[in-house]
Length: 125
Figure 1 (cartoon, rainbow, N blue to C red):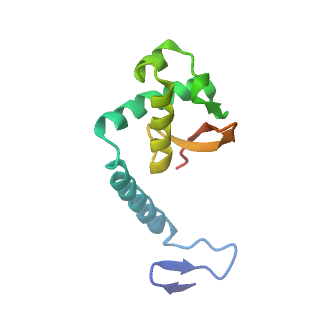
Figure 2: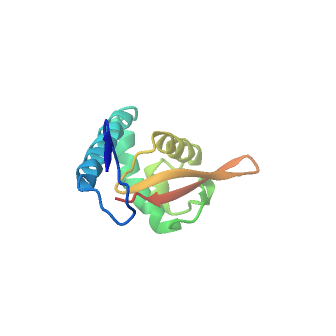
């Protein structure tokens, strides 16, 4: 095993580095700190709205890609004042931050006829 800076390299494939859990914890802490910095770019009301909206969308679409115009549930539409454009822009800002809201991350899933598709993914770990 050799050590350079914060990186540890194990020479044998069956050997588990004794410090790996410490490094995982440190990486997780750094990710959380970066998420907090990124989250501050969203207004608090949008952050709260996304925390409510994404689980509802996940219940509706699961991991399948969807368009904002496909949302037809009155309770979900009421959250965005029945405005599909507002929903699309909100999902875009969430995708730009890359942070999770209640364990869900918004990802772009490509465009079709100039309309953006979205996908919700569970954040692992």
